[in-house]
Length: 154
Image 1 (cartoon, rainbow, N blue to C red):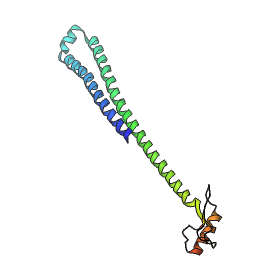
Image 2 (tube, one colour):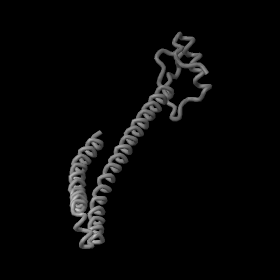
Image 3 (tube, one colour):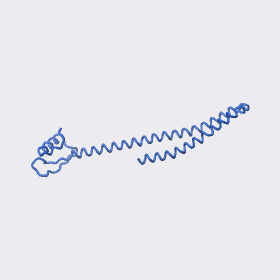
């Protein structure tokens, strides 16, 4: 969550500056275009069309570079937020799966040895990889004899 907040904060400041630069680079293009259209008779009289078109192209290139930087920043933010969101979801899923697997094996790996065999207070027996199905069935039968049948039947 902190990474996501940092990305948003970083992007807001950068985006504001890029929008300002894009507006500043767009203003000369519009100014040049309006001046050229206003003095169109004079431009044609002196034959300055090629020079004014070259100036306009240079100003449009500058404005396009600022616009592309702004669009690139927007795309970068989208990709960064999507990837951090996906990473958070993945981490959540992995943590939840690990938690479930650990609790599942904790529940199945610990059985009372000696329950139902006439002993009072059997000792704990731990299987590293979990019990086999025949061991679970045997324990289930022993616990049912005592009235404690809480293990699932296979």
